[in-house]
Image 1 (cartoon, one colour):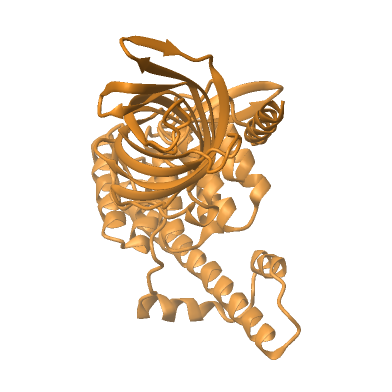
Image 2 (image 1 turned 180 degrees about the horizontal axis):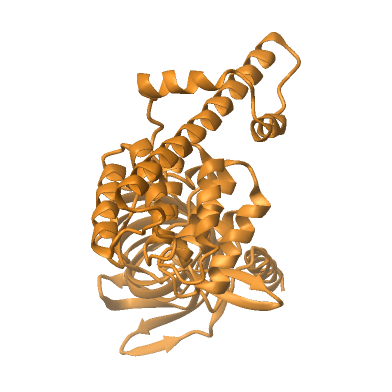
Length: 450
């Protein structure tokens, strides 16, 4: 009776752990990793009849599933069959079989980019055991009994392929429900494989559950949102630039031109400054002044670009006739030239050329691209309001190669400006209008972090 009570307590603990796991929103039918292993069991103080002080060892098998709670912690549930015999791989006097063997443990694994990851774990092992004893030439088997052990151990996992890893582990187990003293103790070694299943993140819309492919390990913190890898990507004969580039310095010519406009602050600059609040201290007032001057410079730079565009448009009108659009070949040639300047980080020159092209022939198939790359230029310089204005112009076109790009970049600019709700709206619109877009997974990831 006392033994049954101990086992019921152990069962209640295992059940409580399962409830806690399900409380984290996990589904038993959707593990993050699955695997199997060979086991080697060594037992001290065997409870086999007629040999209570002996030791035994033997092989076994196990299958398990892991449910990831966080990038560094997961819960593992396993089912196995273990053996322990008085001789290696053979029975001379007695043998013990452990089945069913159920494990539930929490695993803490160091997170990193390296392929070799150490881990530690602790948990519960509930099992049924049955002994077989040889007396003379006859073998006698006992009934099946049930016990539970506490386990603690450590191991190492080595990644061999993108979703496949090898692991080795060892642990110590103490059978706290067993009768008698000393209680049986186990040492278990395992070697096996772990396969990471494709991950799925979930979103809800209108009461319907949608499943979105998620990136590996999730997932990083929101601070990493804008840490995009460098490089370019070809799309529809065009290139997608870096999402964000360091701000470039103004040339002496541009600084001298900006001084022509005086020190008056525009209405939009004043409104932007009002968005930020600073402490009523000397440092706070200096910070507010610096922010105000920066926005003033941004506004004047925009006015300079607009004036340059007007001058160039007037010069072209004198040579080609007022309002005469560029030919398709000339438009594409100048478009490629402006795009090259963008990739050379000559952002202000590129802005002038893109704006002039869009003004010369607003119905050209690449006119919306000009507005898009204007926004990319402003974005690369850190002028997110000007960038957002350019991306919104792209969205006014009914047909454009850059509609999904502009929605994604608009959302990112809103995030940089602190407009979280507006960013969420832009990402959701991208998913609604262009669910097959190559940028849809990125928008899903951002939505999941907002």
